[in-house]
Image (cartoon, rainbow, N blue to C red; front, side, top):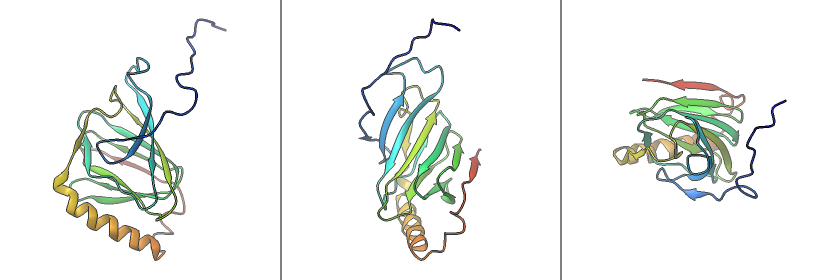
Length: 165
């Protein structure tokens, strides 16, 4: 067995969350500020109950999202098409595609792991304020439908969605 590995603990615990450009609480974990990521970075996203991000793109990099806890809707593309995610779900989005997440539960916090090829983890985010009005409308509608139980069947099992150009 090789003993030439460089193993280190970066922080004595979990890094703090900070508000990102997409109005999400982010805790970058592996990024160019702590290691040479060799093309892959990751971090945690925390979404408080009822929260939704703002529409944005990752200009140059794809994004892979794994839903750890919570019931999430992703709004994706210029028309903000809805994709629903239970815990264990995976979503992959190509660069340049508008998207955002919506926590459907009004109370429970959701947590997601995001992996990207952005060396700094969140440097290539570009807001899409032209979609703000549609985002507000769609997010409110989804949260109402969730409260009425209309989405329960679709949220019963994990899903895999791949959104490409």
